[in-house]
Length: 249
Image 1 (cartoon, helix red, strand yellow):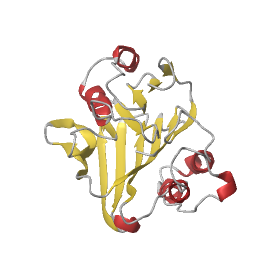
Image 2 (cartoon, one colour; image 1 turned 180 degrees about the vertical axis):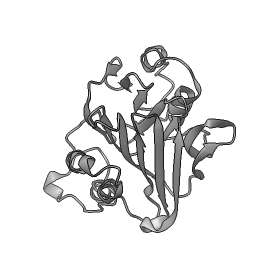
Image 3 (cartoon, one colour; image 1 turned 90 degrees about the vertical axis):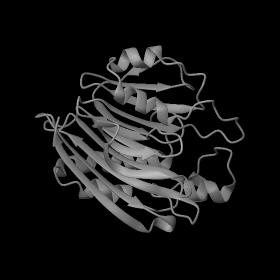
Image 4 (spheres, one colour; image 1 turned 90 degrees about the horizontal axis):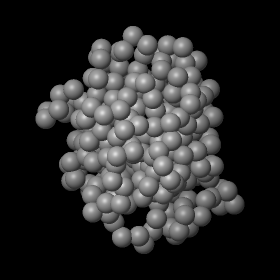
């Protein structure tokens, strides 16, 4: 997952609002968003290579999402970062307890957001102890929380402007579909070649081998009803399928 914007207790009707793009190599096997056959209380996509997920929510109101920290040349961790979210979604600990007890050394650089209905916690194994987040709009890409990367700043601004339109989710999907490339003078320097910095600077990433594979908008309302909509894509942004799941938690 390479872009997540979260509205936490900033809307009178929706305590939790999420708009997210998952960027990944197209060759990595993936299951589209649905209830999990082996854990039918959980909704989300599945990474079929390592068994975890980049984003999901459970019928008990547990939400989790993860992004990697871009660190070219660093050896991979022993465990897949998708297990960070999977274990939380299947568990029962509070978000704070889970984050504080988590063994971080087995994983490559990560950012984790975990919510249990009462609190939203941010944890990165590149940024110190877990942080409880106050009500607000937050963004993650492949650095730390709210890093001022151009695409993240743009996404947060457009997300905030879209909130009054809810329950209409189309403005949130419109921001997730923005494939504008950032001018070279505004690009972050993350250690990848310039052509990749350009490609990855877009909110929606397009290429033949790597790009945005899923755009997800999730809303959880004050009546404990969940709407989870995902749009999936193939190489060069070709639309594949859409999934819409609405359920009471």
